[in-house]
Image (tube, rainbow, N blue to C red; front, side, top):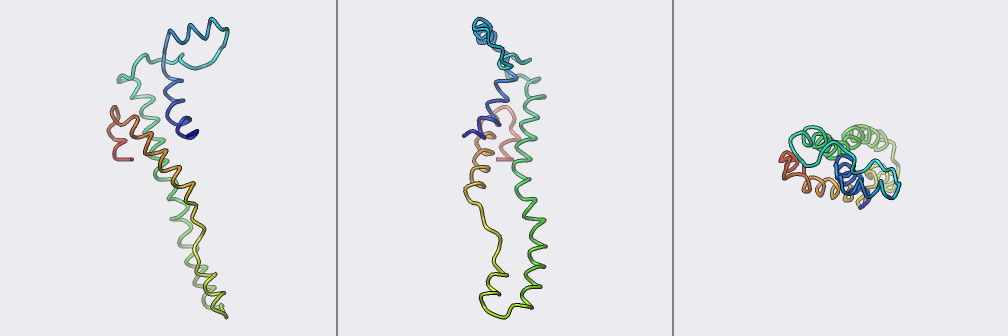
Length: 132
């Protein structure tokens, strides 16, 4: 939930201009950089600047988790091939052929964050439907 908040909501709050909320913070003598952005609505300018950043972030969130797998796979196969020739017992062979630990919770969290952020902004940036 914090990753979704940082990815989706912070971008919205920092770039939004909400005069009423801003005046409330000014009365409380709180100086935050929220609701003091350039956009009063999600118009073409918002999607050109903030929406493009969100699309790029979601594309990176979709692709970057795969990079270590693609890089690591040939190295793992080579190491398995080398160890397979030297293995004496079945246990050594099984350990050499075992793949890396699969981090299910981390991957599902990243996936759900990407899907939910894409769903939130896809009405204005339909390309996010393809990313999700």
